Length: 294
Image (cartoon, rainbow, N blue to C red):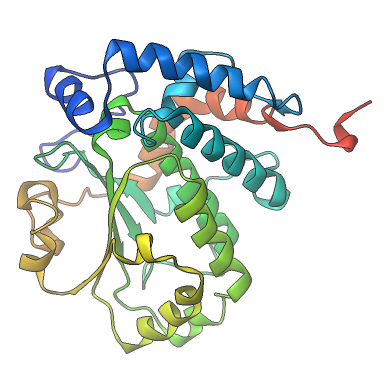
């Protein structure tokens, strides 16, 4: 509970506002949907080494962020699963029951209210709340993957998109020793090339000069499109509220939402366990390699 607000994971929830928004912003009409579902399935049939679920919800997850252009969705699916193939140390046995440290530590979590235009708001605690010896960087990234997966499969988030708020208050030089160019490239590649989500903005808050040193590690890998979506607010909450309205922000970020007391991360993880079958199924999808052939 965030004060009086309850977080709900809205997997199969739409509503008239989002249906109209999808039509206006994503070209989502019955004719476009039918045509591009058919084309995407045809394109994927030419990838015999790629194992995927043959269900419309899967295809829609990739078609919506690509505004229902089948060829763009096809390219995104291939990048998504190539990324998984390239980083087996991250994705092998990636299950909530096995990888829970980052979420239980309260380092990544969605807020209960959406913005006025329907965007999901996600918080990443990248400063003093992150204890690298307790939550190694790769485990932190796995937590990010879990939370973004939920954003991927929420119908409303597929349509309206998401804002990420990265709070780096208390980021120290000792934190920087854990951040390598290899990790920076992996994270940036995932976000800007492989993530099937309409990422509306990445908002950096409470940053100091030390964050500038950290950002310099990531900057060489950033493409212009994603750079334009990164906004540095410091403690200027009015600036942040030009993107995310006050009612959808935490009180410590100038908003109205009360941060929950107690072990919120543990409670969030427990609620997310209902999605564990989806993560289990993901273990069977992807590109088949020679090692997979018995």
